[in-house]
Amino acid sequence: MGRGRGRPRYKGHSRHFTSRDELEQERKKDEEKERKRLLRGEDASTEESESEEESGSDDESTDDEKEKKPKGVEGLIDISNPNVARKGQVKVEKVAGQVSQLTRRQKEELAKQNYQRLQMECKTDQAQKDLARLAIIRKQREAAAGSSSEPPK
Image (cartoon, rainbow, N blue to C red; front, side, top):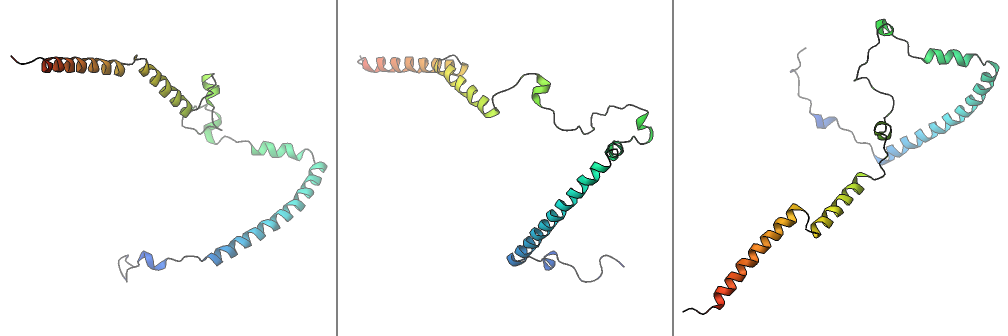
């Protein structure tokens, strides 16, 4: 049969929304199942601990089976693939050797405070440019005030 035959199927027609009552019933059922599992799990754990005491050598054989066995030529050739997923995350402390006590936001705040202090002391480029601009404006105003105060001849 062709895909285009028959009446069109609109996406909105098949939508079904669950009511609050149904959701509440499902939640209660899930909680009840979880309680039953816990009760069964406690009983099973006591039986397992008794069986483990009887057979101590079984644990060693299960650990050996869990180890990853190489497939194909994997065991023969040692390949270092950088894209292979690593176990866990490597902390910066281990890589860099130094421990950073400040967070990024704290570092940004310190840098901002340091910049503001330098700007108040007029040691930044922007502050020096501003002072030069102000000096030029003062000279222009003094010249304008001096020329306007002189009486015209």
